[in-house]
Length: 413
Ligand code: HAM
Image (cartoon, rainbow, N blue to C red; front, side, top):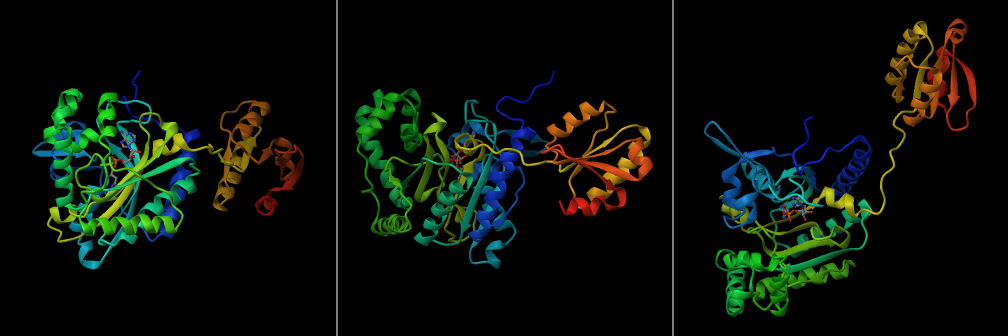
């Protein structure tokens, strides 16, 4: 038997209701905040991500699913920010708008070792706001993430926040980290010893207990921020406080992608175990200019849908899938039932029919499983009289209704 690829999931009908609920809720909230949907391809050129995510990021080094086809070197997109920036520039949206506010919902792919909450195909609900440096946009983005979580019914999450500063500040912070870690290099795990030179920030994300202990003993602060970045960050934290969004300042929060500058944030939930990030985001003020897009600051975030569903308190019960279940008794009745089914659906009434030719009892059981509110039964008797039997599945009551009056009757139920 064929099985699915490890680290991928089938979303079965009993679960797809929860997915639809989350996606529909997200669309409603995004439009409330003025964000419009953008859909970019799943296939992108590998060079797009190599150029923008940073050669030393884990995604570029080992997590991209690559496809070599003829002369093309393609990848399955590992994240949504870079494709949105590409589409923004390629379609000249920067020329028609001062700022663009976009959202996306769709699959992403990373060749990671699968575990709870970590998949190779997972889904993002994300937003990108391109074109403004204003700290009030940072506040909007963080409050939008918070609003979405409330909409999804997620509770007890924590928002952690930091500022990496501008490129100069980031370089200063990296230097400072190196000098403070120098004396303890031998105590770091072998991976972190390599990270020390290549990308010292990755040490701050390390899950190894010894590395974590060393990081916490550094008592990091935001002292490396220049006055402009400091005041930007103060406006962000003050604004968030003023609208009642509580955040935990965490100077060791750096995030795993190189494009971030200034504000970065992560939303964590303790139900998720070691993969505790429900979502994350931040500013990427230099990414657009790296694509020759001029000085265009931007900020965004993305939630992992699978993790959102794990963290939610309630699970969605499927709503009535089918209001009317049509049951023919005998071959002659089947033809009549097909016509009835067609006219019910043409009148926007959700209806289904049993095609199995089984007993009435089995068909009634099927109607119950389909969550039908009513059954329309037609046998020889009904055919002769030009009526149907309409049975209320909740109370069991039934009545005869003239065939030509059935649609009106159901519309008025
Ligand atoms: P990210 O932190 O790599 O950020 O991913 C965002 C979220 O996607 C994570 O917090 C997590 O919930 C989920 N996620 C990531 N990898 C996996 C995985 N292998 N399995 C399941 N869920 C996963 C970004 O991708 C940035 N593009 C976010 C952003 C948008 N920053 C600015 N704009």
